Image (cartoon, one colour):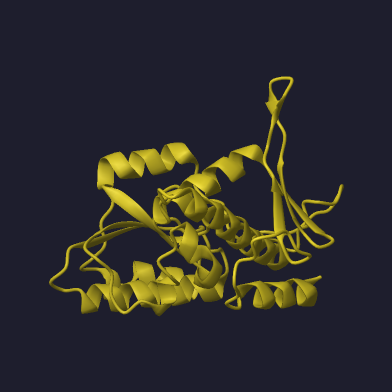
Length: 236
């Protein structure tokens, strides 16, 4: 499924004219409908491929897409907007489903995830107390803010991704939540990248709120606790 999914992503990412009539390559969307007080899942179909997404996630993703791609005024353009939304939603979901090894269209399927996001109450507190407005490790599926950095900007950018955190040379002034995946390699890369950004932005006001595991001896944590970060370290 991995190779097939990537093939579909490449095909759909290629520039193509939007068709006026339904075709075999059209992505169809069955929106979630309320049934006995419960909203059923939305269903995206491309050929024989089917992706189910919860009503909650569907509404959130549509809201994100609309925030970064405003609805046009003309009726003809609205139809094209809807078609591009379905295409981009399918591409993004298929990428993440392939990445984590989870196919939500099949009963009993399971997959792994290396990223533990903080609860919404924590993000609300960070926004209120520290002025946090952006996440450096997120996705359209688990982001709290409308702007974030993510692993797959080619499919995430339509939903608010600013790119990969590891690719940026500098950041705008502000406060950022940093919750990297819990692997020693990524933690060390994150620590080194934050230090480089702090050095490069000496005249820019930056703050980072980090969430890291308690792993004594991990290289990244040793760097964060060491003298290189002494001038920047704060705690409450």
